[in-house]
Length: 234
Image (tube, rainbow, N blue to C red; front, side):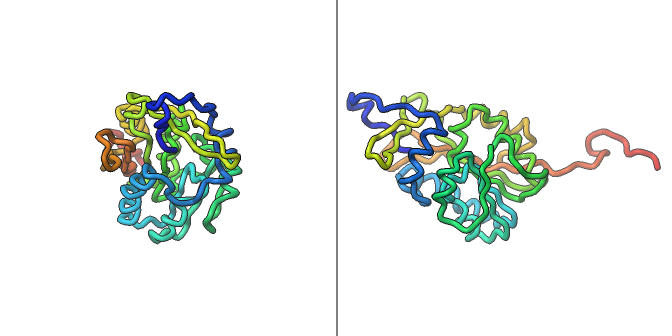
């Protein structure tokens, strides 16, 4: 998941893989911890937000090997569930929390099931950003929290790439879908989510932000009179 510095050095491009194929190859060497500077700076922003929220029922979408499952449990959550499309990644998880193989754009949960939904750097794997955010809002209780991160739009403008080294020793490039901050904000507004925090951390010695982190709250349920609808007579 590191930027491809080889591009600046003129090295030939690596094979570019779609997410399912890439994660199947990457799973064997993918640890359940921040394993590069980008992930470290991302978790350094997200972890304190989650800890302050003290969730009770938490969902980690795009959980992978479960990096955030343990963090959610440490924050006090009584129920922690992970969802990911990649079975190879789920099989490598280093946490006791239950996990499901499923699509973040079609979450296998009832409405208002969780008080916190989080996701780490999964949005870049999705073309349908609105589908994921809509589903996250659907499974959230009113007044509760969505916390997630994405690769910063600066990646697209700078031509940075996601690369990883597989167990065979070869380096591959993982395709991703860039999303502007305006797109994130628009999709959250459509889903009834009000943004509380936007953070754009940088790596040490780098001028451009590398990650964007959002914390949003689902609108509380309103009474009929609050939306201009008269209550029905009984």
